[in-house]
Length: 149
Image 1 (cartoon, rainbow, N blue to C red):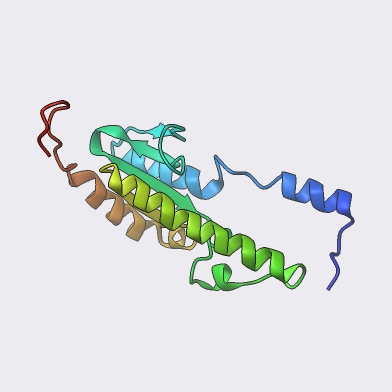
Image 2 (spheres, rainbow, N blue to C red):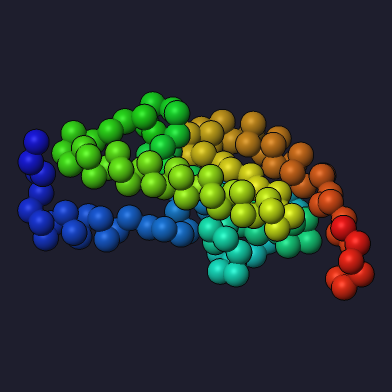
């Protein structure tokens, strides 16, 4: 199936897809702020550049779009009819990168949480999960240079 847009129009449409400050991300950020959490955004020094970072809690939160990250919900399982091979490959690479990023962060001692776009339909359940994240303390690490831990 051919694209319904011209190459120029498709380029303009894709250029408007945001990588940060998306609506789902803003919802999660407002929710965390309301719960008293304070955070940093897009820490470039961490693997995968988490959307929301709470350094004191060693907590990294990713807010994933269901389509872009291949979630198992209806929206995430949908494969576009046009350019099918490209999209299945791209989403598979995104999923593999997400797994790798999580492993790297956990190896550095970070807790990693993922909020899926579709979960925000029931904000109360996401808020309940967020409360639990905020009550768990990070695993204490030994002081640097002592050779312990």
